[in-house]
Image (cartoon, rainbow, N blue to C red; front, side):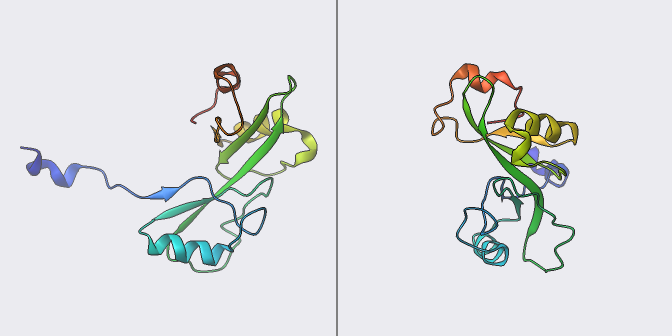
Length: 137
């Protein structure tokens, strides 16, 4: 009898939580990405350029999908393990000069979710993946 309760089921939205634009090492601008992804049926994208604080609210453009703030951090921790970490949420005051571990702590203190990005490509071990209490992989 699931059909009787279909109107109670949550809506599902399609999105991408890890994307780069020309603001860092990506090949497309925000408008180009939005058009491309909206054309493929996406509802939202996170702005996760390397070490670039996003400011969706300050961007006055109109897009065919929802942009959400984020940032990607990369670098080595104190033990020499290399990481790429996607921070989902609005953060401020985080720069590469403070280092990876301090940047992760600052992002978490500001309410960002920390996602370990492409651990196989970065050759992260299971211990690396467990070390910082990531919110996802």
